Amino acid sequence: MIFTETKLKGAFIIDLERREDSRGFFARAFCRKEFENHGLKPDIAQANVASNLKKGTLRGMHFQFPPAAETKLVRATRGAILDIIVDLRPESPTYLRHIAVELNEDNQRALYVPERFAHGYQVLRDNTDTSYQVGEFYSPENESGLMYNDPRLGLSWPLEVSVISEKDQKFSSLDDVEATVKRRMTVA
Image (cartoon, rainbow, N blue to C red):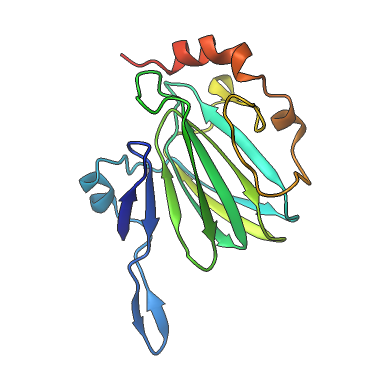
């Protein structure tokens, strides 16, 4: 695996290191030792799959507060997504900054999302599937999110939103929840 750290410390793009022959290729998509060697948490509490029928579908911007903050390893296994993460670590020099990465079935890239980041994506092709390996169990009492179109975040989605859940539409603006986010995302 090829690990490339992004401008957000602890967030990595992970490319496959392919071993090709006449059959096609073989590549390791996860290795606990390699994750540990890069300072990443290799724990997987849940493995999730999302099927997205329509291009333009938007999921996000989701996160869980500590003590249930999640790491995520996200990959598009069919189709394509634009994956965006936002640093919600109050002590970080990149607090509220974001990156966007295209993950698709062709590049077979993964994005490692550290704890205390918001995460969301927009589907770029009809019939797109994603897989997530998540480092913490789902915790409804610690679940939250931010508006995908909050002007303070300045996220740029490439397509008009065609489908979004009612829950994702109702997330509060950063102005309304920032004090809570800072307080609950601060770790000792």
